[in-house]
Image 1 (cartoon, rainbow, N blue to C red):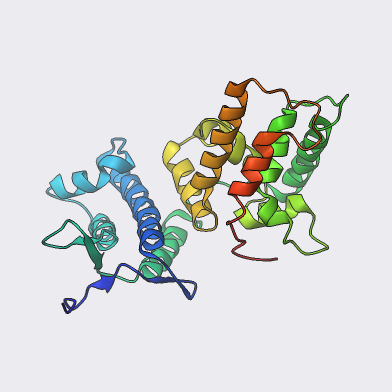
Image 2: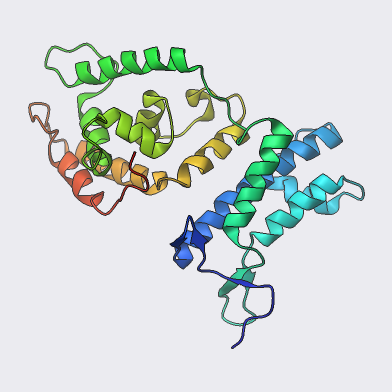
Length: 273
C-alpha cells in the first residue's frame, strides 16, 4: 500500500544512522516531551498559573485564545506523534523527519530560553574540584580501610555497568573522563547517581523544577540508554541483596557484578573522544 503524501516512515535517521522502529519511537517521544515542557513554560507565562508538561497540550487545545508560539509548539507535538493505521492498531509514521524537528526545538530553546536546554550548568572550575573530591570517594570505597560515603559493591557495579565505555576509550582518556564524555556530562557524581540511585529525584540532582530535570534526562537519553542501564543495575543488585550473599571480600564485587558486566556487553559507544 502506498504511503499518503506527507507521512514519513517510522524508521528514520539520526546523525546518518538508520533507526529501528523502536529507536525512532523513543527518539520521537523524547523530543515530544521536550516540546511539551516548553509549551508548559509558555502557557504558565500566558495564564499566570503553573502548567505541567503532562497537561500542557490539552490545555492549549482547550484555551480559546493563546499565542502563535503556543500553537506552533502544539503543532510540533502533533508532528512527533505517530499516525495510526486504520486497522490493526499499528503506527504508520510521522508528519516530519524527527531529526529536523529536534533541531528546530533546540534552536527555539536557545533563542527563547537562552540555552540549548532548560537545565543549568555549574562553573567549570568548581566542577573540576568537585570531580576530584568525588573520585577520591570512589577510590576510598574500594579500599579495605577506606572512608567513603559510597558503597563498595555499588562502586564495582557502577564500573561494571560502564565497562563498555571505558574499555574502548583512548589511551589518554581515563575511565572517568570516558564515562562522562559518553553521557555528555561534566559532573562525575551525577553520572554515578544516574546509574546507582534507586529513584531519580530532581532535587537530588540540584534541580528546582521537575520539568527541567526531565528535559535534562531526555538530553542524556539521546546519547545513552540510561533507562535500560539502570534497570540492569537495579535488577542485579536487588537479586544479589535478596540472596543474602556476602561478596565483601571479593575484589571484583561478586556474582552481581559479573552479571551486570555480561548484560551490558551489547552496549556500544556512540562517540569516541
